[in-house]
Length: 87
Image (cartoon, rainbow, N blue to C red; front, side, top):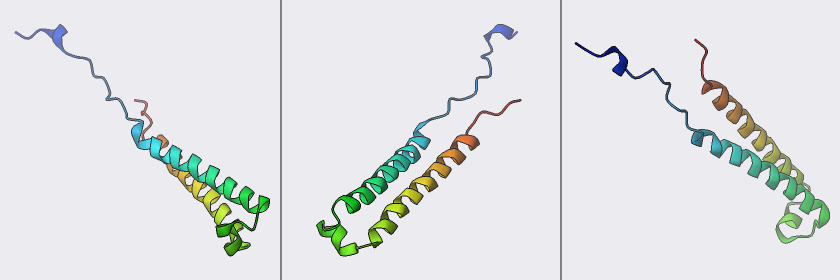
């Protein structure tokens, strides 16, 4: 006869946060680099790389900020999809 008390409870598996770390790091890095790019362009527009691009530096900086927003949306979607469901 089997022992009814030896059964292990149904425990949901732990979800890994490793899958969202890359999106959070990429989002933060993209925002920081984008802001620094724009600030450096305004502080010294004659820097070697920045001086060659001219006003295209603003597009590059805002493009990095927009890329950070895309990573933020990816992070949000991954967190919502991996959230535990209520029974």
